[in-house]
Image 1 (cartoon, helix red, strand yellow):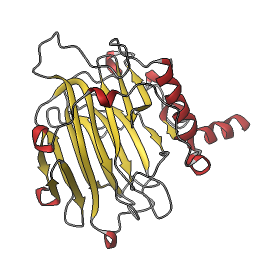
Image 2 (cartoon, rainbow, N blue to C red; image 1 turned 90 degrees about the horizontal axis):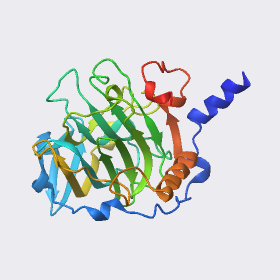
Image 3 (tube, rainbow, N blue to C red; image 1 turned 60 degrees about the horizontal axis):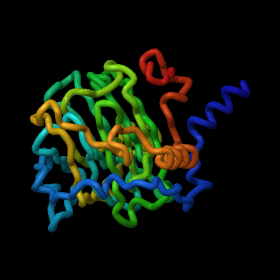
Length: 296
């Protein structure tokens, strides 16, 4: 019983309430500086909700109200790369609202798709946003939910200013970064548990009241509309689906071979120990026969 209680605390304890304002140690390397920024129309097009999207210089705003949300998509698919954007979130009551930046091939493989997510789960007054990272493989998100969620609170207020969020996807690993600090590394341990088919880069804002905030306890309240997500400093660099087979995958670390440096790894461990609020591999209620990457 004591062990169960302790493990429950480790999974669901919310550390940001006592660690707010503590910043992670320097990762020592800043991959976002290695890749050029582009404006929205250079790399993306509206996907849905065109009347809920506006572009001012290089900055994009998308918003949700009771009539619609909005989404955008990269003009080309990739098979690896660095994908980032500086994002500023809506303050105040945003329960039920998701602002997302993610890779997916759901349109190319409906019902059997891959996906790599950065999702900001809306919140109620006085509570922090939750940043959810997730990986779906070959349809595990298509009615057969085998999510691989790791959730974090942040060491800053993401509604006050822009911060840079990124996914680095290579044939060996997926690394999630916040302001160049690695927060999660998902390694390729088998072909069955890793996305390898080409994916497009997407962004969206939408109503997920059924689950987004405290498992659906709090819903979107359109008295506070519009809910706005702002994006700028877009980066999408790597091997497109049309690149030659010899195209070399980008790296998140100083070495071209991939992985993380010791200093980056220590920064990631610090974030996970101070700001991670959920890890699917530590959830005793999950069937881990479906997530064999948790075993080793």
